[in-house]
Amino acid sequence: MDNLDILKSELMNAVNSATDLATLEQTRVTALGKKGKITAMMKGLGGMDPDARRTAGQALNIFKDEISTALDARKVSMEDDALNAQLTEQRVDISLPVRPEEEGRIHPISQTIDEMVAILGEMGMTVAEGPNIEDDWHNFTALNIPLDHPARQEHDTFYLPGDVENRKVLRTHTSPVQIRTMMNNKPPFRIIVPGRTYRCDYDATHSPMFHQVEGLWIDEKTHMGHLKGCIIEFCRALFGVEDLPVRFRPSYFPFTEPSAEVDIGCIRENGQIRIGRGDDWMEVLGCGMVNPNVLENCGIDSTKYQGFAFGMGVERMAMLKYGIPDLRTFYESDLRWLRHYGFSVLDVPSMVGGLNR
Ligand code: PHE
Image (cartoon, rainbow, N blue to C red):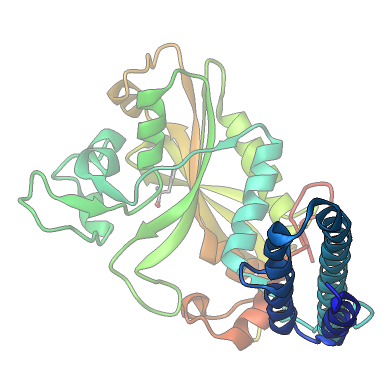
């Protein structure tokens, strides 16, 4: 007990001069551990007489508390120092400007589909979709194209393996979604169908995979005047030409009667085509009044319901609108091409914002 003051200053020195947690822990064990110095002194109290033991016990307890407190305080201050060092070292300079990032572009096909959906959506049509792998019935038969019909050969169909009766096809147009919609829902119908289509064809204006947008509008009183109004409005809005000439030329599709092909006015100048007033015409889509046979094939009463349908190629429209000369470039994933013909991510097509660049 005589050496208490010396031990105290020794231990306090050790605590205050410790610079890492391991050394500090070592000091704690030396003082307060099972075999520590203070613990040994506590044990020694047992051999003293009662008065001396009380005085020494009090002094020892105070000493023990002081050392504990000093150890805890030193530990907290070490942890603070470590945290501060880390904060200084890993400081983030939030005043630095952000690193410039490559801005992505919207592909002209996506942009054109969005524009078409915006225009036709404004007229009250909603988007419908169907599978790319179709069966013969949805792609042909239900659309009034029987097995022996020459239109089957004209479509250059990709067939999946299987016997002739049951083999699946890659849909040659988006028209099978007309059938799926009418089979699974109740009239009236006002749908647009953007999607991929497939035909075995490849040159500057054809690709084995391409996109179409289909329209179907059926209710009790829809007539050819509505078809013409819808198509004329659509073409003028899409090309952003208010007085764009639009011509309906009699044609034939098995699934519409009467049928028409639609031409828009254009000028051809040294190999370039400009859409608008001019002395030339450009074919852009097919349409007609839905053939009653098609309605009946879908279980719709053709004496009560009637309407129109149309279908167009998205690539063709995009090429005409944005002056893209070769269809194959759409799928080459050439970044320079995409930077030139692509659209800003923030350039969302809407009727309000205007659809033209
Ligand atoms: N499905 C036709 C085609 O791919 C286009 C079309 C759709 C024509 C709807 C009339 C009505 O050529």
